[in-house]
Length: 208
Picture 1 (cartoon, rainbow, N blue to C red):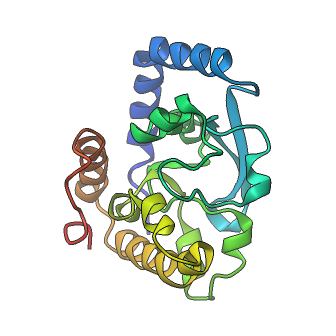
Picture 2: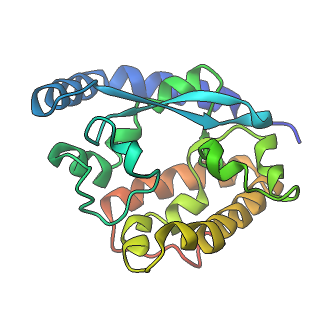
């Protein structure tokens, strides 16, 4: 399958970094002044061809929060800083990944990259999603954009993620990859922007 979206990945991410530079600087200053720790959080994720890369995010958690688990449970996980809560709510924490897109490690649209711990649980069939660049957004992210709250409602969050959420995300991602077009690429981008400002809208059926 030929990836005909790389040109738009580079063009859009470069324009957004330029246009959003004042906002990115403001967010960086607020993070630095509001809590101890670095501005950017760097985490190893699994990318195309099963190769690890360093994914960038604005830091939204307290230092060493990952020692208490990889999953974020509930909208008010006590590891999340006050500023981090709002960055996550409006997805501003993901903006540094535009740099990952420019570097060719990610696409604007594609399967959200997982940590190695969960990729090691993939079946051979599920490994198919590693044949494409991971993305900042995807159809699975739209369906599970309230994943934190969902996990908080079950007795075994990690078990539920592994047995229920992760397989469904992979199913949605495989469907996107097999049917990827410029139309579906731009639909995912515009739908993500719409979802940020209309959190009450459900995408459960629309993204399947």
